[in-house]
Length: 361
Ligand code: PMV
Image (cartoon, rainbow, N blue to C red; front, side, top):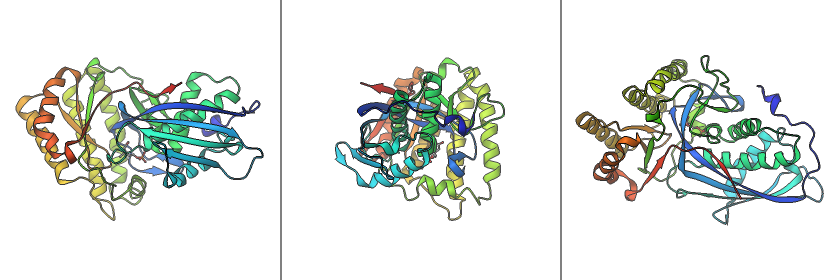
């Protein structure tokens, strides 16, 4: 598919007013997306577990304008409070997607959003937030566009979400989502995420992700700046190649239920992401001393007990502790005994693989 496939045909009569609500989950990348080209095209393919508990719920109320104006008209509320500082990001998103959903300037919108995780948890809400908003807009489009199949609805929601925040395109469906063109993954695309098309052993089906909140403050360097620094990065090309290779490796890992291979690959991906940050010009470090303490404790625990517990990181100091359902009790015990002490105010979130976004009535 190309971008043009997402341009709508003619619309029927636009409804006067209405309200739609969607809940979309966050996701955690196993092979990381880091570096992008124009129009939110990823420099390399990635894959993620869709999460379950960490999610954003967004309602969009739409009221037809008396007369169409040349501006977007929207109010945005977080937990019921007006949130003016979200406006520029939403405006940029609307500008990017307007040609694909051209009804945007016909309405006054009220966007009400809330996250299941605390706002200041250091967990990025951009993936779940942009996914939930994209789904609300698709829901409105579905009311006015000609017949639209579920598959197209999902693909276009992912396509729009990507234009809000790249990784958001992996937050529409579950439970394992791949994004970015890859030679050996049929149907893979730079434009939207797809369900991972190959066999996945049941050991990976009920995976847990306990998110240790090491640092809840604002990140010193945003993802946008980080992606940009991959442009003149000395290791960029090698890194992009490696991501393709790691996706190939994962195929065997998933189909064979190879936990050892999984842990080695996922941890290497996490540390490579941070190595790219540390070797950018200017360089930056998002890990904190407690991030490293946790990593070392996980390695020591695994060496000693052989319990398959591993970690991954996103673009921040928090640690995602990953483990299969079969070792849940031991893993939680270990986390409580040894790792929670490294979390800010002892806070952590128990999450697991989820099935994707859903519409709320
Ligand atoms: O979607 P963005 O622009 O916030 O970038 C996300 C990048 C990582 O979380 C670090 C990796 C990923 O693939 O999600």
